[in-house]
Image 1 (cartoon, rainbow, N blue to C red):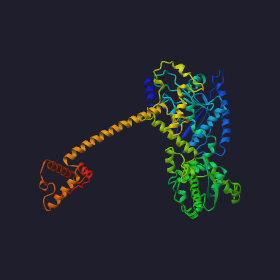
Image 2 (cartoon, rainbow, N blue to C red):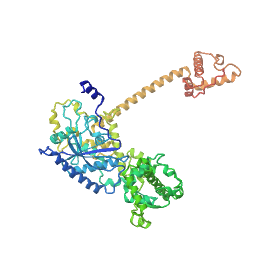
Image 3 (spheres, rainbow, N blue to C red):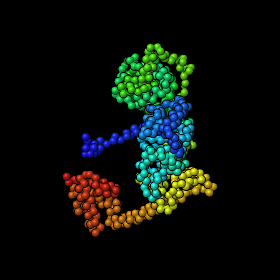
Image 4 (cartoon, rainbow, N blue to C red):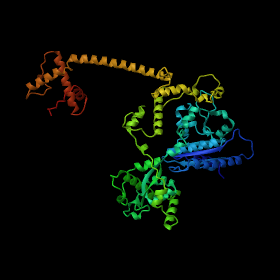
Length: 607
């Protein structure tokens, strides 16, 4: 029988295994059925499960409606019934790879689900935690730090809801919510939510162009590829993503199948090529096009001459894609993927005759021939510089726009935020500091303030003067404020300008003092004759012409000692030459001083 000491030793040695962190490039989401107030029914778990199954069916319909032709970079959106700590939920996790847009497509789907089912609450996090707060960082109250943000951010009926702390003002927030605490607050304390239009607009800013933007995340290009590759992509366009990734992250082991010189040894031989339209994710197409890839010997005879730019570009990109498929099917690293198993079954059906490869006539008459513009991949640095300076489009005939409309809008937003940071009086080296509502010395009762809302439903704890904010933003972006009496500069901005003017005046005063000190030093040096360069050059030239074969210039015999000024000059020259000798030919103060006086360093002839 174990003693108390044994139990204590076991507890101190074998601690509970912590919950694994969410992998990078992944997003995790939970959907809960939380009617408010909490219903007093006997079988709440059964009711919640039934409602969640309805939500799951709606999610399948919504995905089919909005994402019919969508291609995911790595994994797709999916929901499964999950039960943890006695609480049922719909749970999903998606690895979106390098395609950030996949993450926001998922957020959009979740928000639409909350619009269609009014009694569900959604949590969505990634490896950064509550990433919706990161998007709205510039508008958050000061108490909402990452350490206390877990389980506070929810999506309900298409709106962003943030749970406020329950503590007196004047104290730092240390309250951390568990999931069970958050559920109780949602169902029983509806007054604990921040309702801020500003925070919500910032958090969902990337969704402003959805659902239209979903199709803009894809790119269609015409490539020359092996017929088998065309067949696979026509069966399931989503096969493009694992093939591009296999090409993008290739290693020497993955390249082994491509080392053959006989094209017939390849699964996707270049002996039978067709030109078709292929649909990519934008990220995938950029990864394929940007990679430098030496042409395998089996493909070298199939590439057109480089002078034929368009056919060469299409065939080169098709060669990269075919090599990606080849590596995907043969690299042991990829054999456990469902897409690889599916493709192998399709290729076996071709070998047995159960499936037929498409003919040229079929491809020409029935297949899509879409080709999108690649301008979004081009970066003109002059256009970028012009956008950063806030000058917008150029009136010149030459030069285009920087990226697409979305890229320009995002860039302008970044510049606006940066200028806002520069104009923030409280900003330090760690970033902008926000007004801390909990440092207020006001004697107003906390509960009265928390429950007080503006006329439009805006929570006053997280709101501010929108007109002043808009006016300040326009001024910082160089836009007219709309007033007929010229630009109306807000008070904080006016104070900032005054500070800059005072700093400039102080700088001017310092400059004047430095100039006056320089004039005094110059007057003293002129008194010694050091700055009389003509006089020095004359004496040096005279000494050089009358002292051939005599002692070096450091000797007193080479100078006329007539008065006190000449004694000063002799001592100065002697000290300089001794300092030069001490430098031993390297850089030093004496050499630097002579170079400033436009004098060359004399050689030491005594060695």
